[in-house]
Image (cartoon, rainbow, N blue to C red; front, side):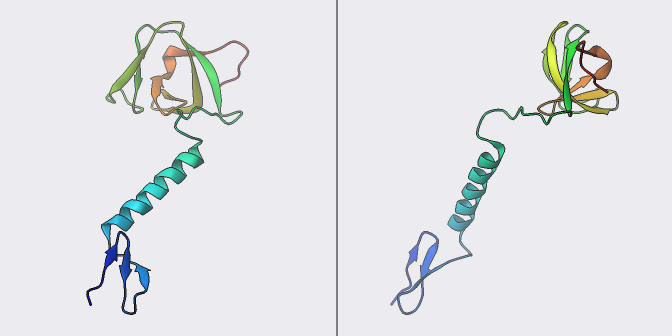
Length: 121
């Protein structure tokens, strides 16, 4: 009698079913479970913008057509432009003269000034 396969289950001798750990469907199922768990852990599908108290503050853009970049270098691709007077929330992390914004993008720190009343380093 031929052994039957049921998605990620395989029939063994005696008619018992067991998980076949060498199947691609099992890999897909585990990947989907991990994806769902990561969405639950992050808080859903909305953009992650939560900030831990004391780790970010508000800045005003003082330059014109300020590039928001993917990395902390001038060679990193620009993904957005900010206008003078725009308000942004950024972290205290400054690397190579670029300040990291909440969400992971980077802006040249000299083109930002802290909003009055906030203490940012």
